[in-house]
Amino acid sequence: MTNRPETRKQGRSQTIALAAFMLMQAVAAVFFVADATRDLFEKPPGAHSIIEALIAVTLVAGIFLVGWQLRLTLERMYAQERALDTARGDFIRIIDAQFDDWGLTPAEREVGLLALKGLDIAEIARLRGAAQGTVRAQLTRIYAKAGVSGRAQFAAWFVEDLLGDGISRPDDAA
Amino acid sequence: MSRRSTTERGADIAPPDPWDPLVRISHWTIAAAVIINGLLSKPGGTVHIWVGWIAMSVLAIRLGWGLLGPREARFSAFPPDPRAAVSHLLSVIRGKPREYPSHNPAGAMMVYALWAMLAIVIGTGLIMTDAKSPITIAEERVAVEQGDWSALVNTASKDDSSDSLDQSDIVKDVHETAANLMLILALIHVAGVAVESHALRRNLVRPMIKGPPK
Image 1 (cartoon, each protein chain N blue to C red):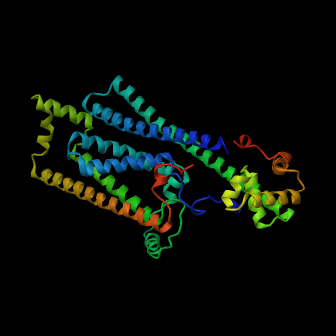
Image 2: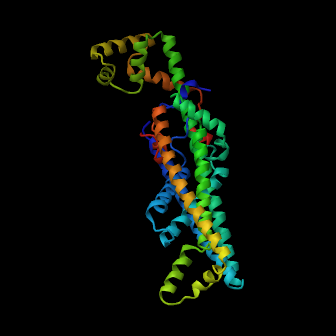
């Protein structure tokens, strides 16, 4: 949760830079091609026009290459975000199934989820508009139902699931 | 595959948030060009021609992106479909617009109308300036001011016959009419975005500027 927005931001600024570069190249290419064509009409073609044609072709090819690169980068970003979404959805489904298994009440489920997210008792109480004593009692009931000693073990229960059967890391997919 | 993995805000199917950077930058560049040339710059002036040429480059890139870009930016994601556009407008009036993965059908018609106007304005502008680049024109103007009138020779010989004079008048009229039409369309476009944003209870301008707040 901590470093993800950062990498996404970096990916975004990279694509923005690519797009801006592509548009600048386009402006440059249009002006250059117009100028070179005018030259071609006014002066007899020579070595000069060969170089100009080469530059024009290189500029235009560069635009296509940057465009292609931009599209690939964007598609990779979308794919990563989708994979992350799916993983998140899967994880939540695992938690849901486990909560079902333990027979948690709706209130306990919410408190349990907030506890998994790392919120402390005071924060959970404030979010739910309940007394801290109530939240503490709910947590105790949750731990009892799950058969764990406390919050660390409660969280570890789900992390173990993730670590246990090799869920592929995002790096492997790319 | 996972029903829970819907985005937190907005519908399951929705235009990208944000739009891809090329769409965003080209959108605002063109918007700026239309405002500058439609309302601010001196018609026929060097700035006016510069802005027109930049708009031409950006339009060319955006059209190329419509063939090669990511899915939401491609023409195939928003085909021109007047009937769908009308039914979309009716659904907006009823207050229950549908969500689309790219531009909605009415928005798509507006996109094509604006591009067509832009192409007409740029094309007629090129005819009016004899397709000379702003650099050439600026150079010629400086030369004429310094007393070298040779740049005027070509133009004068062309304008000799009254026939071509009529033609250039027509081109000028088309240029101005299309430009005015484009400004009106742009106003309708802005109004449409405001109405649709209200109907969907979602800010549609933000994805065109930057991504969701994080």
